[in-house]
Image (cartoon, rainbow, N blue to C red; front, side, top):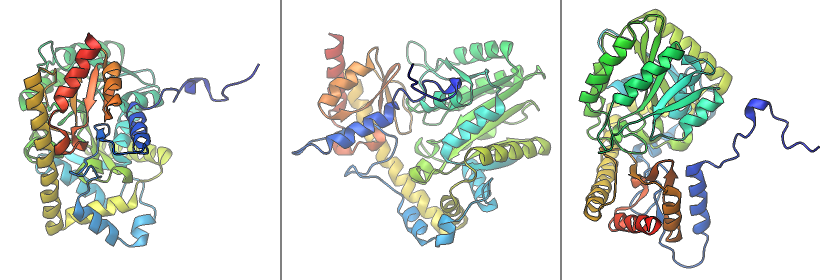
Amino acid sequence: MSLSSLAADHAAGKGSEPDAVFAVVEMIREAKKLPGPINIVDGSIGAMRDEQGEFAVLPVVDEEFRRLPPDTLMDYASIAGSPEFIQAAIDYTFQGFQPKGTIAGAVGTPGGTGAVRLMMCNYTKPGDTVLIPDWFWPAYKTIAQESSIKTENYRMFDADHRFTAEDIKRKSEACLEKQDNLLIIFNTPGHNPTGYSFSEDNWADLIPFFKKLAADTSKRILLGLDIAYIDYSGDPKESRRFLGMFTDLPENMQVLIAFSMSKSFTMYGMRSGAIISFHSSAEVMRDFANINSFSARGAWSNGNHGAQELMAKVCGDPALSQRADRERAAMSTLLRQRSDIFKQEAKEVGLDMLPYTGGFFIALPHANPKAVVAKLTEKHIYLVAMNNGIRVAICAIPLSQVPGLAAIIKAAEEEVDA
């Protein structure tokens, strides 16, 4: 008998399926090697591209990062992150909307991914179920699997593409019948992959519901907010207003926030972010800092020192901070121009599309997304097939390539459906 693996049983089969997004990225790399001029439309990965299709960066970030001395760039960071970085991450996240009467804290992580990982490993038990959207970032399932946790999807939209909270409520109640901790992940504002942002009315409905669940003091209610796209979902100040609604929470209810520098500071590859939380109890917040620092040490040891120092520097200097805001706003305006064209043309050609209010992605429901994406790939249009439709990374598509794209996608769908 020949062995195919010496890994432990729980690791069997991991990685046998390629990552859906990065598999498309690799296809694009290969297409760019082909001879002759090829018009490649890259709507694959969640990173802003400029009007030439090149990686877009905030100039102030590029300039100030290059000014950091070698020891700042390459020396170890502290396990939890420097105090200056932690305070900068907290202040940047809330921008005046920290719920009244609460104490906030943070622990540095490698991007928002690290923050979600800490949520799952420290606020659920192995074998528990975490609730995630039915349209979701695929890494949520990967992170859960790595923590021996199951996932279940809650439905975000009804048959008319209107947001619905009914399935969220039903599945939250069902989970608590089987386990003591409920962790539910909300990717908002600018949800990946739909671009939907929960409204204040949505939260005004959901927050009292979760408070009611917390009336059973034997249970713990954890709301995980993945806010990676918060700065590209309308006015960045207004997009944070909902955070101030989480007031007067029961003792056994806590909000956990995944903050990422990837999109807000265009430092995707530098892998820097934080898990942020708040609570009325100083003891709960000490526990939050202790357990997440401990897990950080055991998973990645410490974060990216250079990225942390860059954020502390930019956020701590009013002139640099204002410049970053202006440059970020210009990117957000460009994103809005692209999405507005696509939305209008999708409506004109009858292309089914889920509600989009901001963020890097647009989602197109379809019963056979892989077949549609394959048809588009033949034309060197690279999108990502998801379980229930197609993801368009509108953030990466120059304005010159947006007109007519909805019609091409619609034609591909009709060809598959014929």
